[in-house]
Amino acid sequence: MRIKALVDRVGAASLLVLTAPVLGVAMVAIRLEGGGDAIFVQERLGLHGARFRLYKLRTMGPATNADGTPRSDAERLGALGRLLRTSSVDELPQLINVLRGEMSLVGPRPLLVQYGPRYSPAQARRHEMRPGLTGWAQVNGRNAISWEEKFRLDTWYIDHWSLGLDAKILLMTAARVVGASGISSAGNATMPEFMGSPAGAA
Image (cartoon, rainbow, N blue to C red; front, side):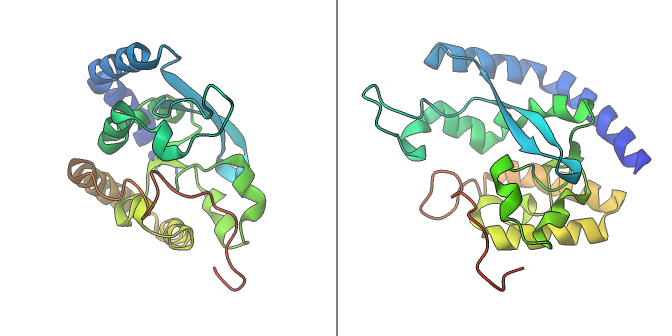
């Protein structure tokens, strides 16, 4: 795991340098479009369920209309937001989380804090490793598969981890980004909230 941590930090630093121009342009475009902060910060669950502050580019508009009525994810996700998500540019600030040791380049994706109590014991195993910028579930369906399948893939990754598998996932991720596959689940702009698995599900 020490080698994985070293690869993470070297890789994250290199990627930050290489993608800095793209990140800079994206941040300016976000500010010009909405006038708000370009960086979105949210608490997520990490290694052993510890909380950390995850960084992303802001892709969603306000949660409510001027009269206070809620807006759907489809309404909040504009053309720029879709472009950033389709290209995965919105994930680039998480390289800072990798440099800080809160995330890895590869691992189960960090999810919302409120999901923690909803996991089954098997699903909670996803916190046995640092969360990743990409992962086995992301290259095998991303948001186009069910939560239960995602968690099964996360557990499979933990049980079969190797540096070779990480390299394979990174290469597959590059192909998925180019192909823009699995961005959203059927009938949703993003992914529906995880409310817990049915009785008997893994």
